Length: 84
Image (cartoon, rainbow, N blue to C red; front, side, top):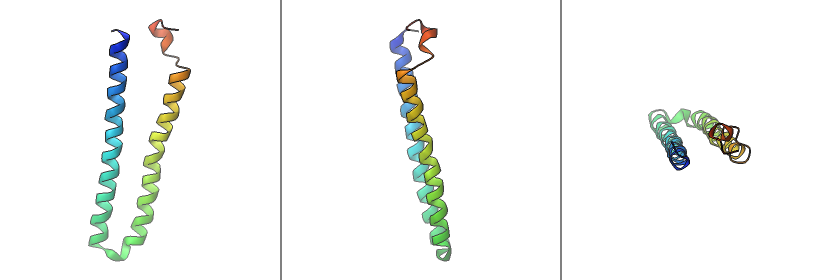
């Protein structure tokens, strides 16, 4: 496999991962609205829990960005490709 193919596969995987995160946030918000409509008295408690889960979901891409920068500037896998 040449380098262009590997880079294309990496980029396509990144786009798929970002799409899954967006879908996850959409599902989280939708389920919050459904549960608030069913039991309005629990809205405050559910909203707090939703923000906690959203924060945890948001932490995953931030960690991914950090790992991405690590791999961009100090990629240990480039040695296996014979590029370093």
